[in-house]
Image 1 (tube, helix red, strand yellow):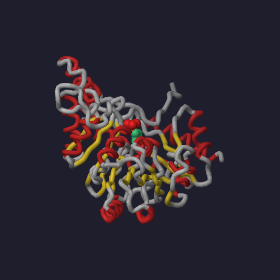
Image 2 (tube, protein in one colour; image 1 turned 180 degrees about the vertical axis):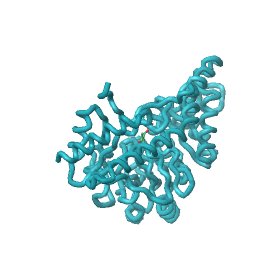
Image 3 (cartoon, protein in one colour; image 1 turned 135 degrees about the vertical axis):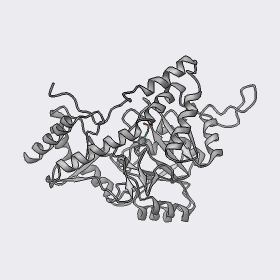
Image 4 (spheres, helix red, strand yellow; image 1 turned 180 degrees about the horizontal axis):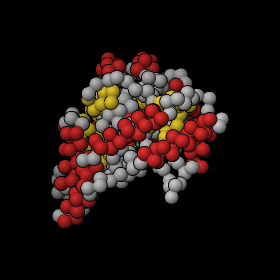
Length: 372
Ligand SMILES: *Cc1c(COP(=O)(O)O)cnc(C)c1O
């Protein structure tokens, strides 16, 4: 069938069945729940992969951001500075904590938080408790600048690396620069456990605390006693087994994502209306999604033309300060995030795509643009 559906990004299990081996082991030992060898193994292996100290496996990237805020001591009425151009899951946990988000614009060089806008935000809100920076689509934020400013103002940095597992900035993995980093294993991410997340940190005491909170905060006595508010956020041993298998193919997935990005860049290079994601010398993105911006062509037009050929594509995230639910909060910046949203399209980046599939996407894009 020529017109099979081409997806943006879908789960891609190893062809060697690694995931099933770990899950089978959990069945065989009846370690179905609650914790067990796969959870411990997945935490250790993920921490080793990104060269950090400690990890806590949780039910989602969102819960990991929530626990990072809790660990950073963010509470009711505190200010949290947050990148505006992102998925809502970055910002929602700020509200869960009763804290107040202040949104900061991106820059065109990285598509992520603009360090000079961050400085303005911290000058306006010097008591801010935390900063959440995001590495969108696997592109790294300008971490040197952001870290220096956070240090200067004595504010805790949290990295939302949900989309950037495997991305490096100056040879260090994103997610390991801030006091806390989080990853997501949701179905469309570069590796998936069907759903899941991880919080990483060099601070073993804070990671142990997160494991405690996320298993209902039971005090260490025989009866049910609670001195703190708990959460039911711990990853199951089955899910962690899928993660351990997926981690073995992460490098293959990154290689394929890069191949997809290079393919688009090469094959669309003569299309002057298309600009590709920014690349920086010192960063190696995982290219989770290949995104483009368009000059003088409406993203909706291109997405409709792709859809007619049964090809999935998506707009770039709509900034948080433009969302009805967040528009009452302060925003520091100009219109960079808004322009990326208004001109951007995420192209199919599914690692199961063949060259023929990629060729079909490219042909459709070229035809659509030449017909304008
Ligand atoms: C996917 C994603 C999240 C949320 O992760 P879940 O595992 O789906 O809860 C948070 N932030 C960003 C930037 C994401 O892309």
